Amino acid sequence: MKLRHISLAVAASLGAAANAYAYNPTAAHDVTVYMSGASAVDNQIAALLDTQVCEANKDYLNFAGGKPNGNYWGISCQTNTLGTKKIASLPANVRVLFIKRSAGGSAQGVSPLLANQAIAHLDVNSCGGGSPNWSCGSQTNILSDAGISDVNPEMFRGRNTPTGFTPVNPADVAANLIVRPVAAQVFGIPVNKLLRDALQDAEIKLGKLPNTCAPGNETEACMPSLSKAQVASILAGGVGFWNDVYVDDNGTQTSLVDFVNAAYRPTDTTVHICRRVDGSGTQAQANANFLGHPCVSTASLPAEVDDVANGPRAFLNSGSGDVEKCLADLNDGTNTATAPVVNTDGRTAWAVGVQGTEKNPTNSKNYRFIKIDGVAPTLENVWNGKYFDWAELTVQYPKTGLSANKIAVIEHIAAQAANPAAVAALNTSTANHTWGQAGYLALSTAGHTLDNVFSTANPVLGYTHAPAGASLDNCRAPTFNQDIAPNSGFTLGLPF
Image 1 (cartoon, rainbow, N blue to C red):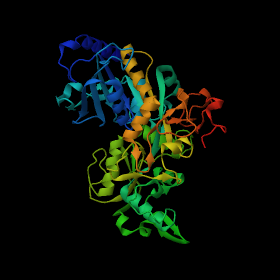
Image 2 (cartoon, rainbow, N blue to C red):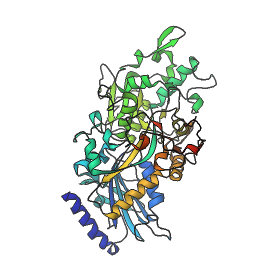
Image 3 (cartoon, rainbow, N blue to C red):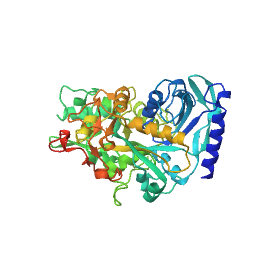
Image 4 (tube, rainbow, N blue to C red):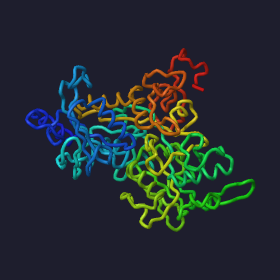
């Protein structure tokens, strides 16, 4: 823990001299928190900081400029400036610096904490520009104070182990980390728009979608579907070319590529997978929910090959924003992605990815979510037990080595992220799709009241991966929370 103690000593000395500096992100702060992990929740964490922590002098830091939510970003501000303190245990007029590393995904919010290993974070001393947006030119290796992951820490074993770390030992988690389940995040399967439109065209012709639908329609009624088994086959690399996917049209077997209108056909019929890197929580929950990994020792593993000759081509993306670029480049024939580069020759291709449903609510990017087994990835469908692709995310921090003020900020972020009112507000602002409300649900296991009719204003989930007081394990099949009072309104114990 030596490095952590040095870091705390430096922070304490800077805090004492804070009033000697002009207020900007490169000056001293009273409390500095470095968090690493899940990129999918960056919009939500940034919004919570903006509204539930910060009150004055807000500055936004990002690698290469702009507001938060790249792979390295931060917020600098003052809290407790008004009559009612945002964070009760902190004094008035506290200067807070929050730095977030999202590169590498959720496991970077788990494995480095267990290994006590410094990892790259935004170097505040490299920031320049002016309020409110600062551009920072480099990273520096620093110990994370806290982590956030799309799944519980014990999931990062097997193929979910990030490069440079060993598989997580559950006993080490129990011995060394405070773990706070925060909320249930709804995930989905995004496909690029070219494939979405092709699936719509095929399903309309087959009578699986209403004839009032047309390719390009953005409503839930016209949302195309793949089965869980079909998605699992694609994610596991079991399908190399779309020419090998056949449509049964009244007994006539036709390749999906040949069956759809020429306007929706790609120039490259290889299956493309815009997945995440090993260690991504988004990938880990997809591995568990679709492939059974690492929950079952004999489960299928996600594809990792880029097989030009035999297909499929799987691209391992560091962040959720990289998945968006991957899908869009293959849709548009462009070359904007850099890590990894997915398209250098202007081809178009049908592509499938993994993503949290809080992404792309305005349809401004050329990919769309699809239904799984005919069910859309909405909050209500998770709430009523019809949609399975979700997981409880967690915030964790070391049991020793952090100051009380750091812990106060971390616990405040975790608590606010779990608050149903805050979750509802974030869903409305960041995950209101044309096909329904998506995003996050608060947890009844955290003591929040469950309504007997679904409400977007009180999105509390009765299902859980931590039944009857057991520790959270997203490998479990979700079951209804047995601790809900018998008079809750559920005469059958389930929100049918």
